[in-house]
Length: 319
Image (cartoon, rainbow, N blue to C red; front, side, top):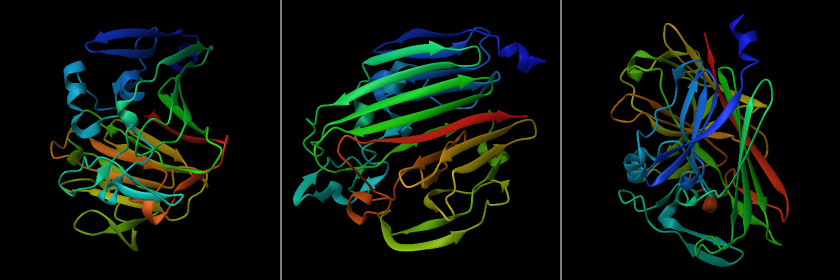
């Protein structure tokens, strides 16, 4: 009965000022489900509430957003993980990204999180609210001098949210591209007390600098679901048998959170799992390519001129 009633609810967008940011909150009129976006941080997803339950660990206010600690909810583009030494070669030209992984001396997570999405559109139906954010990159970045367009569409309905990220190469030649998302999921308690289920996958072998060395290892530790406990993870995985959808589950005694990512040739065929030291949430990060893909080519999209590629993922709360 609750679900039938919910389908008739109205959806709205409110702008919440949290200096120096304007947070855009897509929500239903009862406040049961909402998504909060930070346009000035590359369309980062800061909060997700589904069925009255907060399921995303985001920043509390603008001052905390400025720190960018843990890179919460950020979209990671044009590469989702690390580039070795920040250097790559494309069309016989060598490019150098800034070194922002100061521990391992690599470049990490791209630059989209530092860009502002200026164009927002909102529409709604009886069953969901839709928010679209658009961004055009002029090619001014010295390490990525390529023009491209992005559109992020967020669809919110009862106990679920789906995101579609569309990338278009606006150049007259192929350009490299990779995408990731950096959400920290929570069910309101330490992750040690939660159960995690992962799809069939292989662990990417990495060296002491967290760079892949060409080997993959079958990984079944969470395939049938088990308590996270004291497990510490900061690892990249590749899906063993990518089908249309890869599913991940995080659960306690009351709720089961389902995260999904769409897989295909230009889709999310990789993921990263990270357990932060505070143990209040866990990062389940969809990625379209491997670590250092700009150099090893594993999963790297060689985007064709004027062609659009879509990446999809979403979250739903199951009782």
